[in-house]
Length: 74
Image (cartoon, rainbow, N blue to C red; front, top):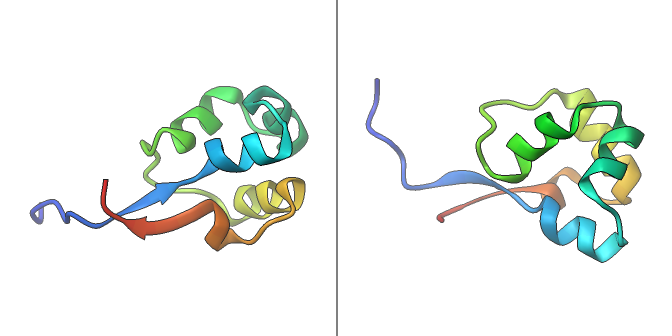
């Protein structure tokens, strides 16, 4: 296994949800995934995301994929 890269994909769901006055549970219902799965994504523990899920998140939050996920350091 390669050494851990200090750069990682960061998720900004907390900020986006706050900007839209929406809860994680509400977004999960609109997107059609479990709260647990969105929580894994929100807490930067996800290893992957389906394009269909990312697309649905962007549709519901009226944003672009780059607003949800960025490359950075913790």
